[in-house]
Amino acid sequence: MWIFKKTVNAKNLPLLLFHAIFSYIAFVNFPAGKFFIGWDALSPEFNLSLNFQRSIFASWQENYGLGALTGHGFATQLPHTMIISLLSFLLPLWSIRPVFIFLCLYLGGLGMYFFTRLLLYKITFEEYQRKFLITTEYICLLTALLYITSLATVQMFYLPLEAFIVHFTALPWLFWIIIRLVGKTNKINIVLFFVINFFSSIQGFIPSLFVVYV
Picture (tube, rainbow, N blue to C red):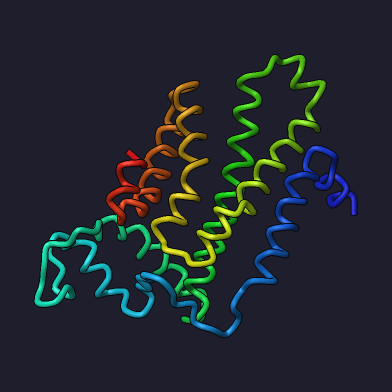
């Protein structure tokens, strides 16, 4: 009981509320027992080895008619296929894509929470930080909830394409790690920078998104 009380304190309550609200959203909308195949879905879980091959030899796509130079960034799907491969060991086939989609929604909201916290700490005085610590956490909660429940987000996840939802997920984390790296260049921040950018590159499947990302 004392561990629970220690965990659920005034400072941690906003973050716990975020997890509770997200869990409710996922529970209500998760397509249990159904394959979630929609607009432009890549679905590498149906043939992982073939999709690894398409990512490694990305310039020429034999599945385009008789073969063609692709206009999409299939090489950027390597991180996506790696994640799907890991999920395929843990989950039934029908649930892999929905889990990935809700994971993107969750990580995007969580990233906005921590990005807002870091930004507020950077632009406020230390005296303000101590005095309004709890208020700051609720501001972070508000921005995270607005990020995952806005009309644009609903539209994006109603007809999801992996490149766009990864862009949604990566955006706050990219801002977060850039601010951290500029503030303090150490090994941890450098490693985090490369890891976040590696998985963020999934959005490069769409050329216009790759331009925004760069």
